[in-house]
Every structure is written in C-alpha cells, then in structure tokens.
Image 1 (cartoon, rainbow, N blue to C red):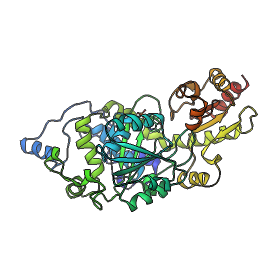
Image 2 (image 1 turned 30 degrees about the vertical axis):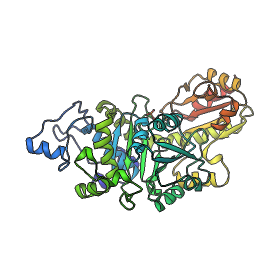
Image 3 (image 1 turned 45 degrees about the vertical axis):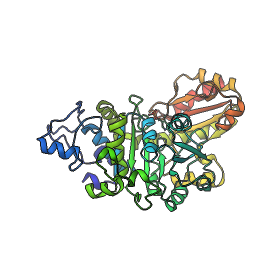
Image 4 (image 1 turned 90 degrees about the horizontal axis):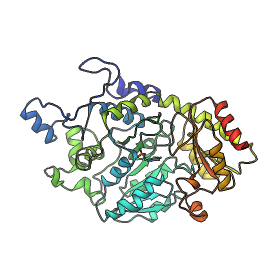
Length: 431
Ligand code: PLP
C-alpha cells in the first residue's frame, strides 16, 4: 500500500515500506541504535560485501531507522531511492563528490546558501573540483559555462535572500542535452516544490530545516530521481562508467540497474563509496527525530505558507518597510517561475528592507517572540539581520552583491497564530 501513496500528508505517516517493526510490531519507527548487524553466515556476509545481496552491514553505510526516513523522503520527492547523511552540508558535498574528480567542474547557480558558497568556492576547489557560478536569471548562462569537464548543474529551488525561484525545467533541459544532471537543493521548499517532476535528476535537503521542523537535529539527505541516463555519454560521466578499483571494478552506471532492477546508481554509489570512505552518516537517533518531523511537514508547510503570506500583506502596509522580498513580489519571468514551480504556497521566508543597518539591528533587538537565530524552517518564527551577523564582514557593495541591503531582515515565519506573529513584528517596527 505504502509505495502507491502520492499525497505528501499521507507519505509523511505511511510512506516507504515500513508498516510496523518486524521484530516487535511497534508502530513508531524504532531507534536502531547499533553499529553492526550479525551476519547469518559466511556466505551471506560475503554476498553483502560483494553487493550480490543488499542488507545491513554497518551503520556508517546503512541503518534500519535511517532506511525508513530515506524511503519516506524519496517518496515525498517522487524519487526512487535516498541516502541520509549527517548534515545538509554533507549532502551538498556528496552530490558533487559523487560525480567529480580533481579537474572536473560543476556549474552552480549564484543564488546559494552561504555555507554552500564556502564549500564550493573554497573547500571543493582546494580539492580540485571547480565550481563555476551562473546567474539563474537567464538559464542559458549554465550552458555558456559548460565544457567537456562539466559533470553537473546545481541550484536551490527557493534561495534566500533574493527568493527568486530557480528555473528548474529550463536548466534540466539544457543539462539533458549534454548528459549533465541537475541537482536541486530543495531545503526551503519541501512539499510545495517537486524538482524531480520538472526534470531534476537529484534532490538534496538539509533535514535540519522544515523536514525536521523542530530545531532539534542536524541532518541531510540525497534523493536519486531515478530518471537520469548515466551511461548515455560515458565520457561525460566517467565515475559512473569507469571500473571502480575500490569495488572489484564495478561500473556503477551499468551494474547498479542490473543488480537492483532500478536506475539508482547515484544513490548506491553515494552510499557504498562515499559513506564508506568519507563517513558522515546520519545517526539513528537524529533519523528518529527527523521522522517525527516528517510526519507533519505537509501540514506545517501549509501553515508556514499561509502565515508568511499574511505577514507579507501586513509588511506592505508599513511605512518603515522600504521593500518586501517574497517569491511572488518579483516581476515578470522571475515571478512566473515561482508560480510554475511552487504549488500550495511560496514558503515561509520573507525578506524586508528597513532602510539602514541601525534600523535592522534595532528591529531584531526589539523582537519579543520571534527568535534571533541563524536557522530557517523551524516551527517557531525566526529572524536574522544579515548585515550584523552572517554577512557582517561585508561592506555595503559586497552586501549588495550577496543580495542583501544593510537594512535587510530575513524572517522565517513559523506556525504560531498569524496574529501573534504580526503583533510581535508590529511592536518591533514601532520600536
Ligand atoms: N542548504 C540550505 C538551503 C541551507 O539553508 C542549509 C543550512 O542553513 C544547508 C543547505 C546546510 O544544511 P545543514 O545546516 O544541515 O548542514
């Protein structure tokens, strides 16, 4: 039954293959707090290590609690398989490391989370993986930066601070012409945006945000859409088409579909090569916490989106607010993209410009209910003033390049009663 479910409200509770614990019939997903699994016999152990059989080996590579989370998030995104990892950062790094060797490159959107920018510009480049940055305003910018060594395109479905929805189909279509997969970070838009339906090959999330939803646990996940032909152009995707010496010469793009009957080479390689070699698994305890969040994420997203729209309407009436940034407040094609790619709402992130650094800081200090934190997607409403925190090293011109003005305040609207959220914002604006 579970695998046929299409609606996100139901997937959160019943998705994947889990019905009850096979050992105890417990309905809640148990926390399998174990490092290892007793092999039935020597032959089974050999088969598991040789990938002739799939099953539990060691929690760095797989775990039954994580497995339920993986199947449910894969179902939520309309993908075929998923791999949970220790953080959203690990998920982004793995997405690129799964396709790139030193000397290869990726073309990424300029509209990215700051941590991803650091990873791409500094750490991965020091390891020989070059990331080229394309303004997603014109999807052709991705093609212009492509060469023979380009292995992937990368973007965020709903990036802040600009909140310009990403042209998913446009860039995915360009990529498919060249056998280049599009990877989408869908952290800011679970449930309301389905990148795989629009042609993305891989989706990743920071589970820390909306899916976990309660600000308790760091986690990340990579979803394989199962919709990409990894072997069509072997030169374009060498890591999927060349024998892997670390796995008795396995050719992932060719062998995984044969072994599993499913087009999930990306997920399997991420698990058996990257989790094996680089570590960074999600802990079973955090997987359990995030499963509790997943049960209600569809419901929470409705409230997040409805509340954010009410806050936007309120802010637009306020003289002290110079500009309100929201996906549908853009003009022309950028606004149309939000309407095309988001269904049921436009997320909980709202930007506002209060005109000056001092006004932004004063607003933050005057909030009584909203939390001042560097996070998004919590059930509670949150606020941050980038110019005095995350972006405090930048001058006004650098701030403008990063898409924030000195008076920019980012709000992540929670699921409290909208009147209470607006009342707190109102009194902080008055201060
Ligand atoms: N992607 C986006 C869009 C994010 O906002 C974040 C964190 O803020 C990350 C990735 C990184 O996730 P994590 O903090 O779980 O490592």
